[in-house]
Image (cartoon, rainbow, N blue to C red; front, side, top):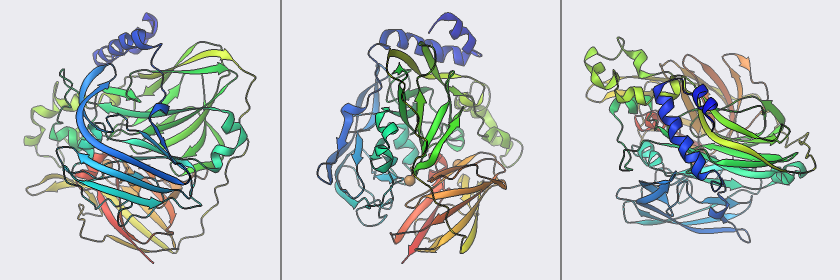
Amino acid sequence: MNRRKFFFLSSSTAGAILLSQCSSATTKQAQSEKLRLSSRRLSSQGGQLDIALNAGYGDINLAGRQAQLYSYNGQVPGPVLEAQPGDSVRIQFSNNLPEATNLHYHGLHVSPTGNADNVFLEIPSGEQLTYEFTIPQNHPAGTFWYHPHLHGLVAKQVSWGMGGLFIVRGELDQIPEIEAAQEELLVIQDFGLDSGGQVITPHPMEQMHGREGQLITINGKVNPTLSIPSGGLLRLRIANASPSRFYRLSLEEHPFYLIATEGGSISEPVEQQELLLTPGQRVEVLVPGEREPGEYRLLNQPYNRGSMGMMGGGMMGRGMMGRGMMGRGRMGRGQTNDSGNVEVLATLRYNGQVEPLPLPKRLIPVDALPEPETTRRFTFSHGMAPGQGMVFLINGKTFDHQRIDTQVQLNTVEDWELVNTGMMDHPIHLHTNHFQVIDRNGQPEPYRAWRDTVLVPVGGTVRIRVRFTDFPGKTVYHCHILDHEDLGMMGTIEMLS
Ligand code: C2O
Ligand code: CU
Ligand code: CU
């Protein structure tokens, strides 16, 4: 990174520190910092994905330094699991963490019961469990991911490094233009580390806002390099695997052509200048190499997701405002992305030349769902509970795994109105079944897409439509700011056959 760009970007001291860190990392490592996660790929063979995953705690090389993290198979991010529709999956999971954990397969349409995608399982420290499920024959191709889901520990364990991609390859991957594109996987994580490489325990106020770390990595690296030949086509699968941070991505002088959202392909590519990725969300985009050869930065633009600070004189007593929120308090540190800095997450470098590759015109059709049989309303808010402090609520209640909040009938269609009456944005996620966004604040969604997570901004109402299919049983929906989920913003849903 040259000096001009460096100064252009340092709009504050915090930004300057961040950027001086990544500029030194860039010059040293630019050559070797390839993004590739392919060496970490564990793929299915003959219809079987049969692997061992070991959750452990120890030294990890992260962005050129040692950090003490939680990981899967000693890797941050974890290995890339890859399967096809119809495959059976068998994961021999060992928990070598000093605490309990479990696994969730975020976005997969598989059974939420038994030893499948069951978030109510708890695997104590030192124990093992074999997860087993089948990916349906008609499962969409897409970019999914796995991470721990033990209520109360999710934000911690994800912020300590746990998470990995789960890719289902299918129809979308067979479209010739997409097959010809060069695929790169981008897992974005953030870490709050002290000088010894230990993860910093967030202040309670930071937790309420949703913890954010100052070190942002893609595939465990700071500002890695992606290369593209002139005329080439890059296919990026991007996952936000951070506990709370939003990423508002743009690539200098290059639009993104969106081809897939969380639930897989959209009907045709949609040109976007920016991609807003909330925690839990994934996108797939195509980037044509059609600019002057050179280097272009993948930037993270500021985004204000609301804050506890806004609650100052309101629901919070003055007594709770204290030092933590003021001055150099941790609250301030936790909001860098809210405070106007642009950060460089990766660099795209032109390298070589190929015959220009075209963009696909059509992808996989996304059919409209029929009109709903039932409409429900979910209100997301927060408040004070005696003896508990701040709690996060859905329809006025905090999570209770023994209570059934929502009962639905398999093979019916429902509309859910998601209403945010709080002071912070909430990205809302539903397990097991994908949904379509119908409208946001009454504005019809511009294109149809399958999703599993949708942003419900402060004061906003989002209407989603979902058909419950295939799998009876109990699972959850929740805010994917994982601290909010751990602090109660989660409900249970039972799907009845
Ligand atoms: Cu990504 Cu319920 O989780
Ligand atoms: Cu999930
Ligand atoms: Cu939230």
